[in-house]
Length: 378
Image (tube, rainbow, N blue to C red):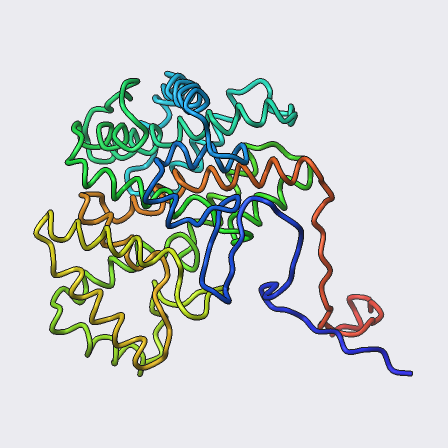
């Protein structure tokens, strides 16, 4: 009786690795929920701070819970003098994702509770990282620009404070809202590559900081978080809306990898795209940079027409961040600012019901063979 053939799912496609109550991706109806709430509703009706609380605690906060959460987050913003000094030593040519990865690792080294993975301690670590990651990103940005670091303000909200630390001022409320919406849309997305990385690391009973550092490394890749940067590089290369269709047709003919389109889970469009595109369009009109959305529409239409492949969240997020004034290499670190909430929720969920994640592989190498001595090998 022959054994059943082994089916290898490359990239673990279609494999259900565990249970989770953090979010649900529903590809059949192109929908995404956080703790049961539709992400587009959360983006429109809630602040990112409320969404962060929801992901970490399981429920939307009441007013007193919201106020206490925001107060605690603000109290943790300031970086140590040691970390600030180290940030100033980072090579200015390095990618900001390398910088924030190193900063998170150092923040972990500063925490004497490194091996304490109790629920209360991990929650506190998660809020500390939520508070400190934007400050570290902004400090590195200012340093690379040859400018003085701007300290966080404790009377500003999460999104407002990031603009303040990067540019020294808070832009129009419409721009801040678009940024806040993007953070909510990027906050969580099931067992994506970086989240699964954090869960694998956590399953070894390593610490939360180590898991997040691994998540940042995974997110850096252009096939994951780094795609939003590649989208804007592509749009800048095209530059003229009249050239967009021909550019896409040529790229498809040459079988180039076109970032910002398609998704491992969604097949008929990413449920987050309509909301992000709406705010990107508002930014285009507000900042008088409409050509980027004209290029967007031409590329989108041509790709769907030719391949029936729809954009993912990175496609509208790239030009949106560019129109907000951020350098392209800042896009993925901003993703980290948002996804730290989802990562932390998954790390705590994995810790609460842990079993080390250790899959098998199907061996395809040479059959067993004997070792010959050196002389007989010629």
